[in-house]
Image 1 (spheres, rainbow, N blue to C red):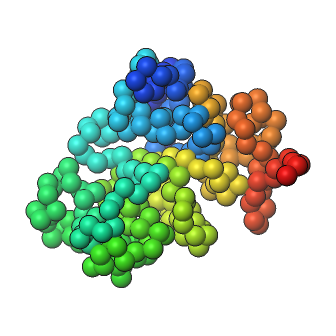
Image 2 (cartoon, helix red, strand yellow; image 1 turned 180 degrees about the horizontal axis):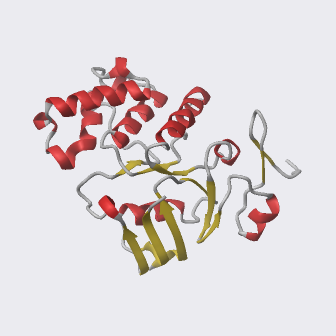
Length: 251
């Protein structure tokens, strides 16, 4: 097991506002980390630090091995919201090939090897019949699968997903976690989600981010532990159908 990212005592945010305070975590090459926490607690900010989209105010972020280069596409990313204009005249193949943009330049310059890699990735995600479709024809779940294919076409060492199951159906959600379970055999995965009941059956460890970060080296976590982490999530239970149990509340 090799360390691929090291985050030490990071303070980060936007403009003059500090969102993350004294955050530290090490990421290894076989990790499957579920990140939970309240809205505004800094989950996406942490991802932006790892992706290099923002620089910490204080602290260090260190990448190991082939993650050191920002041009080798060794970090795959599936963002929280799809910013692709579905009216734009572009095909599924074009979107997926754009995941190789740093290695090959513009889409028109992609080689036969690149195009075959796109076909293989489509097949792996289970959407091989969609390659020539315009993105405007896709459902929400299909679009997320396309963006996931784009994120993994370069065979990254680390795959980052920011609430990938938002605005999609239950069928896609189940398929997504099965796909991620297979991908984790080849790459480290970090997933941000509010669906703590489901991820507890798939992830290996859990991090609660609420301005600070508390790392739990297991996928089983109690309500008492969450309370001690200052993480406003209720009890996670396990069974054939994982679920979250909420405290009694009045309407």
